[in-house]
Length: 307
Image (tube, rainbow, N blue to C red; front, side, top):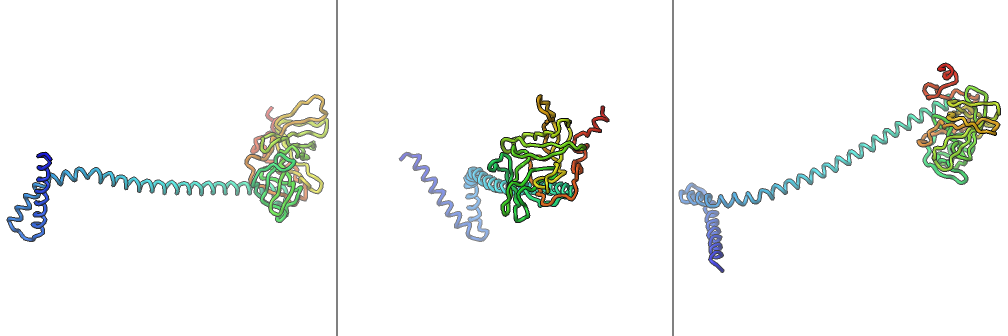
């Protein structure tokens, strides 16, 4: 081994011996001038070593504290994010409840004005039943008094008819289904016809087709349709809004007038509905149609007045 290695071992040994002496001296109480001088010399000799060791250890300690703080912050952030998610879920639930309450109010208003007795229900799923293209399932059935061939409405108008009812659920054929045909009457007139569904698949947004019965009868864009009513209110009670004529078709060779009608019900957001279990004593006629100024449609008198 070279002289540098021997010198290093000698320095380490001296420092260890001095450290031991200082420990012994420091443990003695009193103001002995010899021990005080020894402490002073030792402090002077070892201070550079102590400062250097602290300088080396400081970044390591700082890094550990930073990591510890970062870990706590991450946990805090996760906690806040989870709390925010819970609050958002609660707000969405509250908004959903408010929306359902509003829809129920509209439904009850329509039923009260028309004189219908209803069983409120929820359209829980949209399905394709055998032989039909556009149907929904309700969360009520025979146990609630629901039977086949009952009229189904929401707060804006006609939804469809009950096709079949189980103990606690019912399948409803929507008026947009190709198998659906509803006797209808033009508002403010005695002209009657048939509103038929044209949907080939669930929710394809196809409007209704309306055909007048009389060859002399005419329709206009903006005129609205209500249910004519069936014998003993089965399957359709009278006076329920069906939709609004959006286009009059000129079909050569046809003896009657035909057109397209936009349904009064938004089938894309169907939720709260009512099954009419008892019809009205009197035909409500056009009383369930909303005010034209609120509905966005002009009556014949409005159109004539604007000319």
